[in-house]
Amino acid sequence: MKSIFDWLSANEQMIYIIILVIFLGFIVISRVPTVLHTPLMSHANAISGVVIIGAIIVMGRADSNNYGALILGLLAVIAGAINVVGGFVVTDRMMEMFKKKK
Image (tube, rainbow, N blue to C red; front, side, top):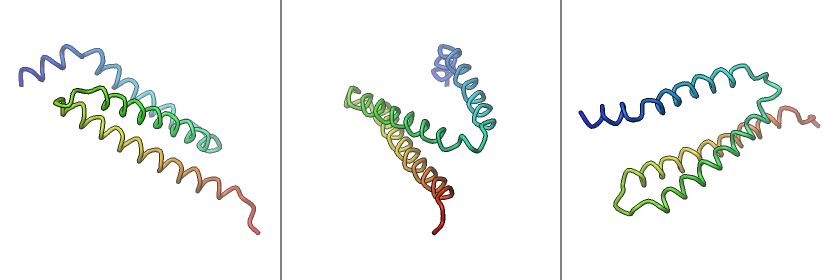
């Protein structure tokens, strides 16, 4: 338990930054007009692609005995892939709404 508190106190500024970024992201995304959601999803897909590539690089450079880095990298790849696929599905459904019906 002491090691957890030591880690939290050593990374206190990073934790504050992550919390502020989460709130800022929520505020920014919630105020986006519905017309801009499709371009926003495209950018989110691009960011998720960068996350996937970064996770693959981290997994490739991690020591084979460092299970924590490997598991986090695997989870990042899975979460990023789900986000990319879901983003494309949502974008496709939104684009279908704007097509003219025959």
